[in-house]
Image 1 (cartoon, rainbow, N blue to C red):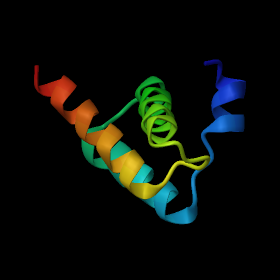
Image 2: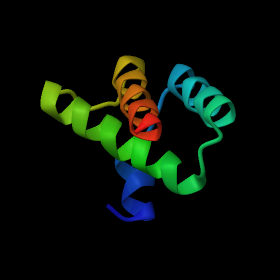
Image 3: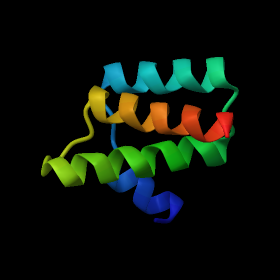
Image 4: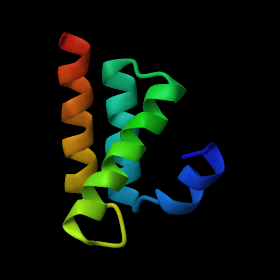
Length: 71
């Protein structure tokens, strides 16, 4: 997924935006990691068969990122 596609298909509501900003700050994530989290959240939403990324999709994606950083 390109940056353009991420902006097009990975739109977040205000709660999702706040959650992602908080994760970026607390975990010290880079812009590249930001995009990876959004891609994962999009995949989780697709698996559930929903059109929009919801906060719980984003929270799950962030948890996977935290696990990845511990390894």
